[in-house]
Each structure stands twice: as structure tokens, then as C-alpha cells.
Image (tube, rainbow, N blue to C red; front, top):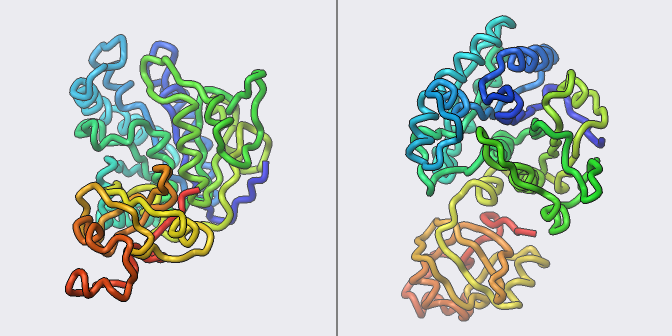
Length: 368
């Protein structure tokens, strides 16, 4: 499988609703117990385990006697608010048997887009892991989420959490054995997530869940882009976690990009909300993508989005294809005035020059 975990590896395990619910949609405590046994064993081997668990809405649906998943965000918020306490109670009860505490962490996407809150979330999870006797359990804060601040599904959230803590593995447990090709065979290994891989992903129609293989592939793209290996496996298989740790062939393994990027650049690439767009010419594209240079004003064609100094901007080529993301040293209004000019005349145009670079290489991530 190509998995070689270091000692005390940090593993993010995403648990889908289908893994901990019965066919009727109710939380299956027997399944929770089987997972807890496996996780406790990994903890005894000194692995750092973070769970990203679905199930709050399923629990709420069960308690409130919903037959189908709520269709509106308002209804989902109400159901999730009821279900989240029930879900955490179930987790607390099963892990208590192995003398582990549980810690609830509820996130919304805007909580990771703001740099200070991003760092606070990272520090909290890392501190919990250092304790050794606590299992952090992360979920989207469905009770307060709006359309604008939703992750959309816990697959993407798990990838964001893996990047947040610089995990050594993202393990996505589903009710299927992995990614199937068009002939119905499991794809054992994915070297690169390209258009062909995306095409063979399929959605789901389960009443208690959202997502499907499409969102798992999207999550894998985020995590592998951050240099984190990803495995999609069947969480219903016996001793699946132990098989994964041993490196046994089980599921679909996504090979990480070579070399992990820094924590700051992971935030820029995967967590920070874009605030504007800068379109560049072919010369600037070549300099940024091939020569490892910063973005200068002379290569900028246009700017849009009402952004300010320090905001994240998407950098696009003339065909509107994203090539990079970065933190800008100039506002949109300033860039409109200095686009296409040489660095040494910025002062003449603006009356000042804050930086030579519009986006410095150290604050930029190339999107491949």
C-alpha cells in the first residue's frame, strides 16, 4: 500500500454516518463499541488519534422522529443541536471503558479562514493530543452553520483538520471498500487525482448523510496536496484500523504530493477564504509557476474583488485558470494604478512603495 507511519504518528480518522448507524438510521452502539476497541489499541501504541465524526444529524433525526434528512439549513441546525449532545454522550460512554476522555471541537469554515482562530484551533487539538488520555472529536458546527460558512460535508472537514495539525495520515472510513473503477474493481492506488479519477466518483442518496465518493476524492485532493497520504477504506471490515496500521492492502490509497508545505502555506492553500482575484500575463505566469518568483506589478493585467492589504487573492492566468494563491501587499485600488508598471516606478505612481512585490513568494502557494 505504500504506507509507512512514523512512531507516534498523528492520524485523522473520518467516521461517516453509515459506519455508526444501523439500516434504520439509528446510532448503532455496538458499532461504536467496535470502533472504540480499535482506537483504544492505537492509542496504546502511542498514535495520536483525532476523530472527525458525522452522526449529529442522524442522532437528532432519531430523537425527533425524522424519517428523512432535513432539506433546509434551518431544520438541519435544529436537528443537529439536539443530536450533537447525544452523539458526544455515546462517544464518551464507549471510550470511558478504556479510561479515555473525549473532547468536543465544533468548527465552521470561517473559523479556519481567519488566521488567529486557525492557530487557536490547531493549538487546542495539539494540546489535547499531547495529553495522551484524550480523544479529540471534531464535527462541523451544524447548529450555527449557514450556507456561506459550511464545509459542506465532513470529508472536506477531515482534510482541513489533517492539514491543520500536519497529520501523517487521513483515514476516511466509509461503507464501501474504496474507489471503484468503471469495471467495478477497487482502485488500489492513486498516484495523482486527475480528471479521470474525479469522473469515476459517485454521489450518495442515503437519507442520513451527504457527500459520497465525489467529496472523498475532493478531500483526498486537499490532503495529498498538503503532503498527507489518504486512505479510503471500509469501516465495517473487521479490525480495519489494525490492518491499516500494519500496511495491509485495504481500500484506495492516495499518494501524497512530494514534500510537505509549511503550516502557513497550508492555511493559504486550503483554509483561507479568497477575497479577490488577480489576472496575470504569460510572463508573470512563467515567473511564478516555473521560476519560483514573486508576483510583480509589471505582470498584472487586472484585479477584481474589492480586496485590501493582507487579504488572500487568487492568481489566475489570462484564461482564468487558477495558478496560485497568496497574501497581497497591495489593495485592489492600488493594483489598478500600478498594474503593468516596473517596480522602480511604483513610488512615482502611488506616492509611496510599501513592497517591491505584490505577492511575495513566501506568502504564495502554487496550485497545480
